[in-house]
Length: 271
Ligand code: NDP
Image (cartoon, rainbow, N blue to C red; front, side, top):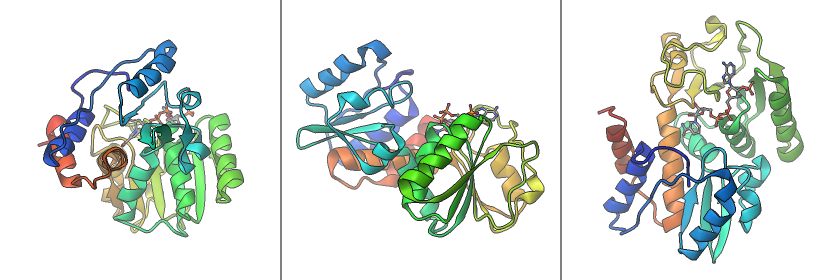
């Protein structure tokens, strides 16, 4: 259940998995007004939905209408994927899990030092999964003090991870002992010239630099990082992997990630 236009790339990606695996299932995009959320969830139950995704503004307000939450969704207090298990609607959050899956293909986050820009929905999901995966230290850098310090406190209090908050300063410097840098903000979305206010000389070879933004795929941050010898991870992998996890949760099969990735790239006009 999401707000937005029909025929979006996520629909193409999920339905490609259903087709590939011979499932006569549908994944449909519906716009639900905030006031209609309770009846929409009741409707999904009555209609026998195996689950659904949610986007803003429903990720938090859906929780009272569900029967339970997965571990990370409970910690971050946000749900983007609902799964029917034994007749109960359980809220999960697959954004951070999708990111982690992409990251693990490049680096094992256990014991690693992370600098995370942002403290919104995507950043929170990523931070909680990194903490649960045993990241060494998570430094949250955010423009607004309130959201940033709240996320660092959540990580310390609820996961036991080592985490601190730093207000985003002009030409922000990445500490040299950082292993993983993540843009978890919306800076760069639809604007390939949009720059993060950081000291690009503090991006060092060997760091893994990641962006949640997937449109454009090669953001300013990734181009700068690559030019300085960093390994880079774009936002498409996270998007594909959260889709893979959703399809697995709903259907019980392990979908072919390559099929989903190809369908997404085609729908986005990338190939
Ligand atoms: P939110 O609105 O919840 O959070 C936005 C974050 O960006 C906040 O930390 C905000 O800081 C920061 N921000 C925005 N503009 C600026 C700016 N000009 N300067 C400094 N900080 C800024 O958004 P989401 O977390 O839901 O989404 C963030 C991005 O992640 C989007 O581009 C979205 O497309 C992408 N995304 C990608 C996914 C994927 O699968 N690849 C999945 C989900 C999201 P502040 O707190 O100060 O306002």
